[in-house]
Length: 223
Ligand code: 5RP
Image (cartoon, rainbow, N blue to C red; front, side, top):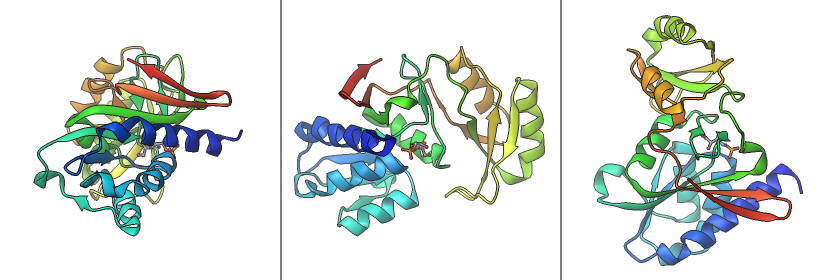
């Protein structure tokens, strides 16, 4: 099975996993990326069973609207029982690196207010130590140089993502060369740099469940 088929299998498993949670008042939180796109396509098949969704990006919102799934502004929603999203790297504690698609800030906001965070991925995303995948950091444009110097001070090698502006109008610095053993500590340290909107470490609020597509089937990992 290729990587895409494994992503698709994880997305299918997530649709089955959340099905019992769906009622006509349920709002589902939706992530961003190719695995999340597969999930949106499966969710569309049961759109009559739930009220609508809160999106973590313009791209996912557009895809959902194309399927006729109602999309709500987070400020108009009281409760998100479940959030489903992909990942760039997860360790065995389900601490994550996210933001390959640049949607990390909105993803982190939706994850932070959701009851259960269900992560979906192919098996290549599970690692022993986070950091081989460059850590995305969303930065206010005027602070690019200052934040980059601070990230070097933390042991990283930041690279300005070419030709990319986030949905919030900011830039991304992708930080290479990290071997992350204290994800919660590094998340706090980076988020504390003035000019950083947020970093793509999801450790203070890790995933609750990781549905991992493997050639033999989808494994369920819990934190
Ligand atoms: C977007 C993300 C994505 O979830 C992450 O990049 C994984 O993407 P894909 O499912 O395409 O492999 O964090 O900001």
